[in-house]
Amino acid sequence: MNRRTFGIGVGVGAVATIVALAVLVVAAVLVFGLPVDQFFAPTETGAGSGLSAETVEYEVLAENLDVPWEVVVLGEGRYLVTERSGDLLLIEDGQRRVLEQFDELDTPPLGEGGLLGIAVHPNFEENNYLYVYQTVARESVENTVRRYEVDFASNELRNETVIIDGIPSDRFHNGGRIAFGPDDHLYVTTGDATQSDLAQDRGSLAGKILRLTPDGGVPEDNPFGNEVYSYGHRNPQGLAWDDRGRLWATEHGSDARDELNLVERGANYGWPEIRGDETAPEMRSPVFHSGAYETRAPAGTAAVDGSVFFAGLRGERLYEATITGERVSAFTAHFSGDFGRIRGVTVGPDREYLYLTTSNTDGRGEPGADDDRLIRIPLAAF
Image (cartoon, rainbow, N blue to C red; front, side, top):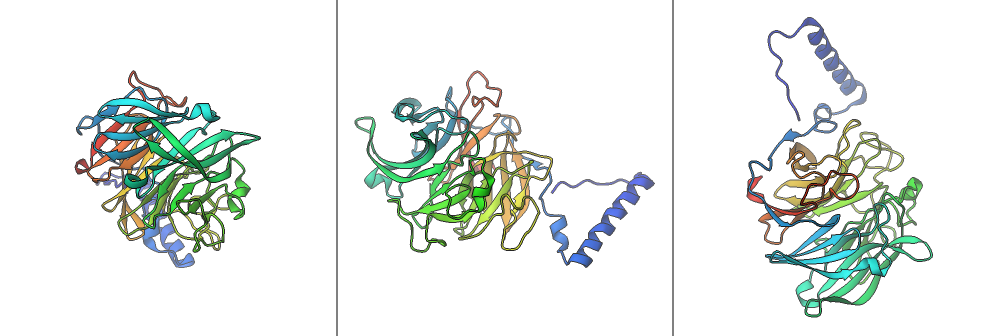
């Protein structure tokens, strides 16, 4: 929370304003039974300033990328990167090669759709299974998740398997993040495809976080007997599990109010019925949100050592939410404007680095001469 120190010279009007605000808080506590600390939680506030590119030694691992969306760290010096326009890149020891061109497989560069999230199977070293979220144009435009077997020797993907089809798509709100959880199941974020009512429809795949077996089946303990794990989401674009195995998700809000949610099985996160601090029976409000006057457009997410890091597209920052219990106890903005729009945030398997992808060539940023970039930052710097 931002704090300001008031000096002795504060005017009478300012003192009256402070007293009036204090009275309102106390009245709300007495009338509604609300906890005092709710009014001083770091929701609806700006972030404290953190690290900058001038003070941190970071590395640019690749540059001149075309709207990179996701990065998977295979090992030291080896990375898979998706470009939204359709190329899946293998970056190895500073060199890149196109592993697959999904634009030749009917992936259109449609608005916010295209080649989006990727994830590798928990036993990737044995089976080489790669999962891909992409927008496809068939009889209609939809989002889909497919599994492939990576053949690095022949530089190709083989044995395409449909994991899930028929995820609604539109020019905006496609979700697109996929990740394996600690339970070895695949989690998929889907947007409401600009049809907000679908988010409350548990029979629709839109506006959800889905949970699937690695083969695309429905786990027996899913809450509704289908793929849906949680619902009432607008456009979630980040997934991360903390050291306690809890799932955190970032979500693009409406009229700002971008969200950080603690996601639980079967829970309803309210869209479009509630947003921000609003409440309703059997609906969850976010743990944290940006307030009505700041749009962060959160994207990729990573949870490390008690903090949840997430990218800001519109915010052009790397945000760090320090978690205490189930609350955000501190909130910090790093690299404010240093890298422009940030899309992807990934922690490496050695947990020594954070990896960022910028998104300045997506038509909404101001690309520099080397954009877009894949950047590596030591976690010890935070």
